Image 1 (tube, helix red, strand yellow):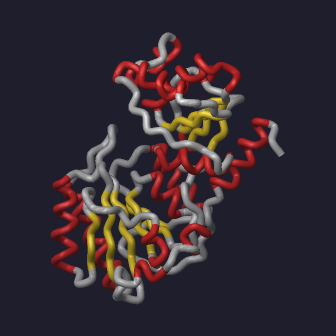
Image 2 (cartoon, one colour):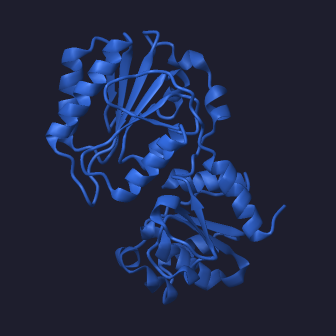
Image 3 (cartoon, one colour):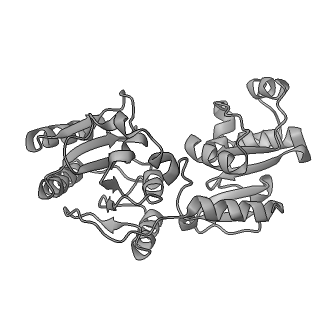
Length: 302
């Protein structure tokens, strides 16, 4: 969520300040309390010469913070909230909501997936020598794994199935595998992935949650990307690059996310992953470019 906020801030103006603020429990749970009071910790931030033109917040838990700041700063600031806050739209100047949520309104801009905090130029301009040790084969396959969500917890058998397909794909191109897991990936699933890949692949490395994450820099030397279907952000970000993108779905994906993925397939941005890796003529997602044009138009900028 922080990365999406940074992405929009960069597009609006390079002169931005990133503030890490953990809202009080009640404000996270009941965002409309922001109409009634300003948390002491947030009040301290405002008094520190804090005079923004825009405030960007992301995720429902931060919606109360946006409401509180708007109440205090009034028309001196424009509030932009990313993702569906599940509140009345009147509490925000502008909302950026994923297209697959189906939310519409006069102050809503629909985005195709998530905003990307890096661009193709950012990846292309990285020093390739940083990754010479990481890449030992002609083809590097990057697997990015999500995991548990509020609505669904994948079964262990689904991780075994994912492993089998990935092993088949990596072996078919005589490649190497690098795996990145998320904070949502349960320990049991991480163990399954690590054991399966260690036993069946010679050139394999996993970056565990407590290790320094090489993403997105590792994309510089990635030849094929496989992402689990629950990882909308990583799908959206990889979709902006020319790297062939393959999506592996768990058995009970969210219907809205499935709709998003199916749309990417129709656009030629991604392919379903069933154990085969191959080159294809990929279309690149242009979410950032399209979104900032719409934001500028909404606020009357050139």
